[in-house]
Image (cartoon, rainbow, N blue to C red; front, side, top):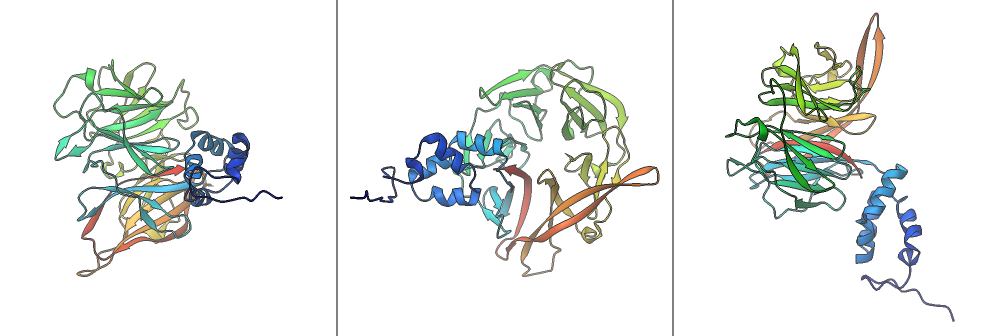
Length: 374
């Protein structure tokens, strides 16, 4: 008599994929697309548990079987607080992530992307700086509180280097340099105040990126934070030496300090729909060519999307009373060409579409956007 297989919707499942040895089941699941994994997670608690298993995440990442998902942190008015949205990879629409019971800061937060999630650090709550730190898990779309900072901060800058998050500035009422930098150890979940022994520290970091040896186009012993302050002065921060070093250069172009990102070179969001680039060792910003279709739009945000593209978000022009609020999204690929003695960067808009349309909203404030491979 053959054994009858019964599919159940609880953890008492009799047979199926999860009846296999754990290692074999995880190896099979690691080769399934994320959308299919989400569908499997609905089947039963055991499938959901497998979907959230950290070993499965690590195996999928090691096998290179992850895909970039764009996440947007946005305040849609008149909602009381911001929330996370995710760009659906098939429908190409921004979908709201289920609401979080933890009140989100209204503004002034800094963000750090890790392998599987995004940290929201500090910001303004009821108009006052907070030490609150939240972690958004991009696998199960949960938001969790983690250990708060020692100092309340708003308008700080944060960078991730070797599983440690360095948070600079943002202390409104404290001038003591011993409190200016805090470091969060992701592995231990603890914060440490870091005394910075520098003859001059930046006032308020306006933009920053992390450079490694190849990206810096110079000889570096370790990863460093490359930053510009609100006065346009350039600094580099060494984690091992615990010091900021001013390079004596000043950026005269105030409007070019938006959304710095490293993508073989340094890129930023300019005005009038322009995207600009330069090498870290240079000061002159150059325009990315071939993006004329973006001219005239005011880009809201640019961010890395994958190893081959970056993402651009912009708002549709106002059309008067009764207009439909629209947020547009595009993906841009880049190529480098040599023209004469100089190199030029050319961009191509690979796709673009309205990813959010809503006539019931009075407006929105897009606070952050990032891509996470999950």
